Image (cartoon, rainbow, N blue to C red; front, side):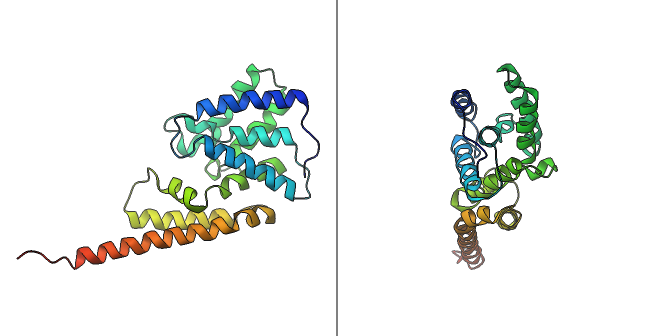
Length: 211
């Protein structure tokens, strides 16, 4: 649940942040503005479904900025740490107090397993789960495949393994309930791609050469 309601000043700040995030993610491949909005939407849903108190401003801003590090080319596995640095500079420029800055940047850092800093606070855990949910389903699988190196078979195997791990590592039952259908969809999508790949390999192996 939310511990309180957003005040007028926070609503105005979030409105400006949405414009900033939309512009910065305009050219981001895969982790685009629609992904940011979905993660924010899932974060709000999770917060509304659990008994623990979450601060709405910390949660929403953390979700909006969670992938800001991806606007830097090559950040990839470091995007959580890079994003926290970018967000910190932005928050300082708008006059946000130090305690709030640290709390939100921790959400950004801990949302990604690649930061190797596990989420601790309720807001950190919620955004982590919300991001994991949006890695599932058709769109999530597609983002997991985009730009990856290696054979198609190896990429599919890695993607299926990671998506399954994402689902079972979520912190809240409410998160798994939200992501359940997408988790099933992910397996179906990858199974279908595997079948198409196997059929392609079979056709190549049994190619009738004009001899």
